[in-house]
Length: 251
Ligand SMILES: NC(=O)C1=CN([C@@H]2O[C@H](COP(=O)(O)OP(=O)(O)OC[C@H]3O[C@@H](n4cnc5c(N)ncnc54)[C@H](OP(=O)(O)O)[C@@H]3O)[C@@H](O)[C@H]2O)C=CC1
Ligand SMILES: O=C(O)C1=N[C@H](C(=O)O)C[C@H](O)C1
Image (tube, rainbow, N blue to C red; front, side):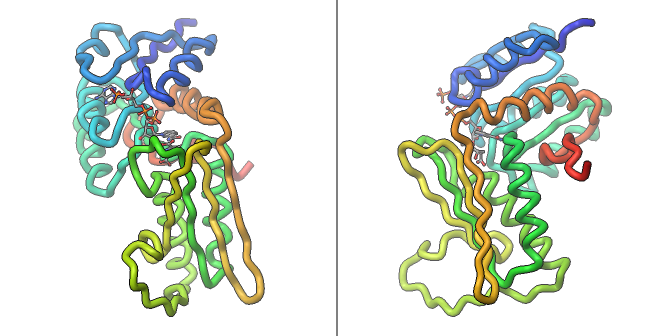
């Protein structure tokens, strides 16, 4: 059987270099191209890449993805910075390129996907919910993509359960003291040397709290998810948002 030809964009970065190692170690894949900042995207078509893994920067990802989709190269995207408007734009490109698939995963960690799912399940049982994202200080964005996605899932579950707004009598005198408000769920971003990628989701109810915590202790934690995405994206035309769609979470 022929091997899947995979390119890595951002290949010299923290995640990209880990992805290069993962692809090289996968028996069913072949590393077709490694692109860094300033490299021409035409190297992708020249290399015959079938799937491109984007682990670059929120400022770079749209240009990269437009190139991939318009050239029929499937995309597996870990890069953050996704808004509804950006997702709509990607869907538009995909409509014009039938058969091409893009997976955008706020987090490739299996444990992180489960954390989001458990938070979604718990949300309707608690009056209060807040998200704390803890990351290394080199991270480009805050809050993290995972934290934003988690807050959105909690907010949607609260809305489905017809819960009222969260109780909060605070009158803040210092901007930012209560973090960012994502659809009514507060998100706090910590950036500390020594951390990689961690998150706590804290729920509060009458006389009790529930904390769901996930820790990525090494960037290798993201690689099974990246490789799963690479294997599956070609048979999932259009946009898939979230790795959970490629996992059997009900089984
Ligand atoms: N979904 C997930 O599971 C995960 C997602 N991430 C996300 O992945 C992204 C990368 O993270 P991380 O590896 O820590 O960041 P790094 O800064 O370590 O790596 C990014 C790399 O991309 C390069 N780059 C920038 N622009 C381009 C471009 N236009 N084309 C090709 N390469 C480019 C950078 O080059 P230069 O150094 O010259 O700027 C750098 O080498 C972030 O958005 C992060 O949040 C991270 C971990 C897990
Ligand atoms: O930049 C990172 O490091 C990470 N980014 C992703 C995010 O923003 O959620 C995933 C993971 O938490 C690590």
